[in-house]
Image (cartoon, rainbow, N blue to C red):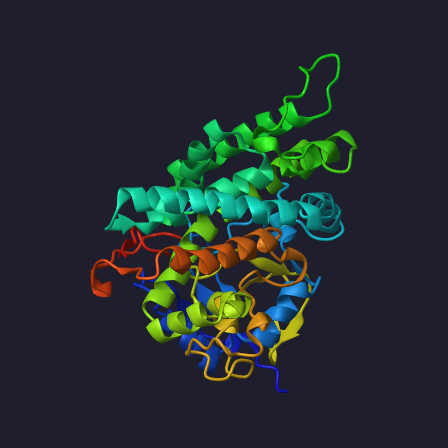
Length: 419
């Protein structure tokens, strides 16, 4: 394959629009089909970066150790947000072997036993939320009644976050993941959530003469099943530093709160606006797991791109040489619409045999650590919602729905429904 000299590549300025509904970013479509490895400049930061859009190339960059997340630290890389989201030491900006070491610690919170417990708990939480929505009566905002409190409750159960901290955690998360909030507000939110997790992990560490006895976890959760306890044990054992444990806790909490909230709402919206798929799913409940994969592939769950990587040496990707030192972004969204992998990719297809090949949870070492919980929540939600409310439908015309502006993870502001 011919290697294109980097000096011939134009630099495209990309300021992602606030798109309504599930509309796909036309810039990503154009790059995927016309310039699958190209150069971009985003609204904040300096210089340019490479954007990789094809499925195979995205997988390569995501898993190849020649592309470093750690090397991004201290560089003002061109980016979407005015602030840099991860904290120093966070697993999201770590490379192996440090990343592998931290990932091994967090695996202790995602055992088969803990996931079985959380599935049972998810059903209880969702049933309670739907009971409350039924008492409220139609019309009701599904975001307020279900898709916001449900993932917040579940990630807090996984973490071991006390009930009184959950709403502040949600507010801080919104501040961090909303570019429109501005740099100062976002940095303040990041500092606040980090301070709280520092205190929570400190309280969960093994008692010493200088510490108070450990309190029993809320909700009857087993001691070793709480991620805060797993992280505290890692700190006690010297496997990870406190700042690393805090960074990992923040990553899981904000992903499980904000990303799952919006993507759950997007899934419901997608089915409400594809009634033939909804009817099929209700008639064949065994399709739910595959439907979740296809919805994860189909829904453009974020705006633009996530974190950059830095090329540690010259690397050829898709016939283009990316020079050492250049920043690189991958688009999991465009990879999920790659026609070389997914036939008729713009169509939602519940019979798609390879839907599970999507990259909605990323790929390689930085595959989302909370993916098991997110998938579990989606399956419980889609398997339960229309059983409880068979006539569930939008309460307003779809073009009257308002969609979040300046959000890194896309979703509606409200999702009014009737039944």
